[in-house]
Length: 291
Image (cartoon, rainbow, N blue to C red; front, top):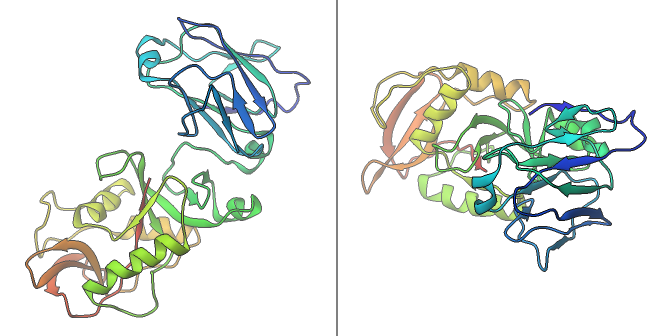
């Protein structure tokens, strides 16, 4: 999807099309009303066609019902000079649905402020996933918007037990190493102290790390768990550093995968290989956010 800034237009008219009805969506004071049955706003199911408690400055994602998705053909959003785009900047406006939308597409309508900061709901590798569940081009943009940078996106897709992608924390979960059993507690604490809308903290698995290595431009052996085979992790490390995060230590990091009742898999960054180790040994940990 392309972002087009319509800040120069004094008035906007938007046409999104649906085959079965012509409801009018009204963007009111912290609310969206007039929603067709089965549609959601930012993943929230409306009550009597309305979703409230939506910040005026927040990116608004309208998702058609599964039934409507099957019938849709395209998204058409038209400004007064007939420029068409998939994503536009609006503050408060009415959206009339009159023709079909694109299959598997979503109308993403960011606020005027969101366009200025680059805030989006579309995941991009190297961009920041923040505490509000939205995505920013860098940590500064998130902070300027008043939210906390949580992690840098390092994989986009749904093949790693996630819905849209994986982001990796900008820093280790602790300055001190820990046993494998202790990692479960730090995940719980992280979830309580650093909640992120629409995302879940977890200790990365072996396959998670391999997915991250490859998505950032590196490589990993194709077997799920194969001790001694080398991976190329340098591009993941570069992605973290470019986002303002701290690099991995040249040491061992725990994964969530057990290799036996007494051992678990860990990854060593100074040799770029996976190994098994007794769970009572102390290594470092860095969490990922599945979103």
